[in-house]
Length: 292
Ligand code: SF4
Image (cartoon, rainbow, N blue to C red; front, side):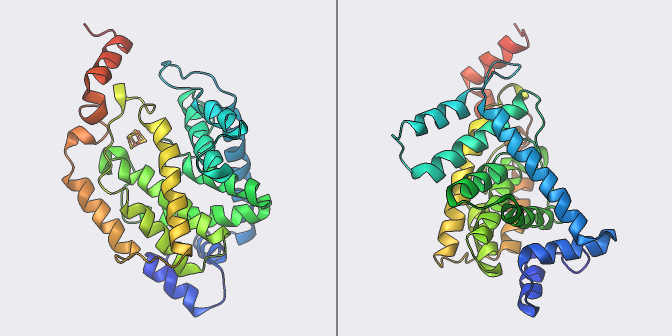
């Protein structure tokens, strides 16, 4: 997106005209790819269908190939149906749906990376929960998905989005920030509010280590998607209430890159630190790979 490299560019473009964020992203991308914007919107609709299906399949349950995870999304949603919930149906569904996508990923099912497979839960999980609770149809929800995707593209233009390069902050932190931007947009936030939602969310994941047990995208990754979904809801809620990120989003992204560079190798997807190297993490790894 030639005219759109930073979040500051995005706010400037939004101030210049009357186009909402989803149209700005689609128009810029369409111009760069030389395809009609409507075709891109159609592609987003198709991705949304896959995302919703990954939630549905994830909720059906079943263990991962390793047997380490599976069934937690179903547990959360069934508990919710009992009515005994701490944060309301939106919160419960956002947690369950976000976990469901990662459980499906752990079974090698089809998911849409958002921005990566390990962080694929928050965007569909939170947007679907909101759309169901507020009665928002697919066409309208996809506008939030476009915003989330556009936010992810802007971060990806300046940072590597992998746990191996930047720790989990670069995967789940960015996924949660994308979700926060999309949620704020669907809830009526203006351009600056949506960017603040993302900034508030991302800054509260900085330093998050990538420490998958046995090197599998299962523990802590699956449940972590449910927890970072809560950060996305908090980011949208606070920004819509008028809370502003003191540090601009572009600078939060720069801070994330620098923190990633400073992180030890053991906390960047090597399974050589953090939870992976706890006594239980080591025992699981040794059992799975039959290490004596
Ligand atoms: S802990 Fe590592 S592998 Fe798991 S989701 Fe985070 S970045 Fe990905």
